[in-house]
Length: 161
Figure 1 (cartoon, rainbow, N blue to C red):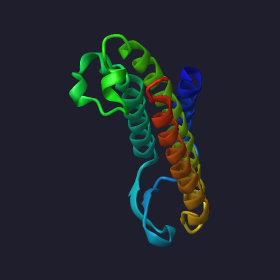
Figure 2 (cartoon, rainbow, N blue to C red):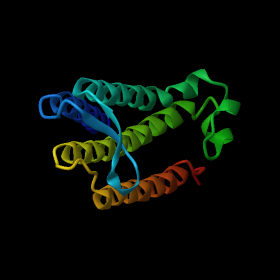
Figure 3 (cartoon, rainbow, N blue to C red):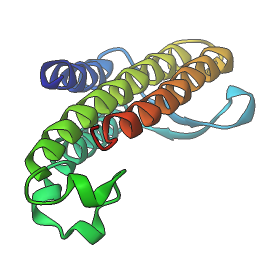
Figure 4 (cartoon, one colour):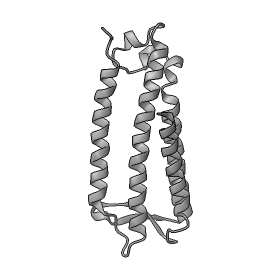
């Protein structure tokens, strides 16, 4: 899952940086109810904001599982923590958690990519307006995936028979 995660991250950064070439001088970067813009910036500021956000999310997903070796068990919230964080199983737990974080990170970047496309589309339309229906569909799919992923995580971290 590491390669799709890195690819999704890079796709988002490339989309953000390429957006500078097509966005108008006054770019809507936030939208309120009804899809109407309520905050504006220059295209370069938009690209910088998105790229920094992408980088912070990348580092969070990349290193969060590695903290299982550095933090005391009481600071790690994991199903069946006593079993998975003992000396014998901790390395396996870190490997499983790393895989799960890459999967969730990839889904997060797919969601962000879709949102960025919607923002670009809104800024290239006249008048500037975000289409809310595709936004809600993307959000609903992301929430649905989050529920699936949470159930998957709990099942994966059951105590083996």
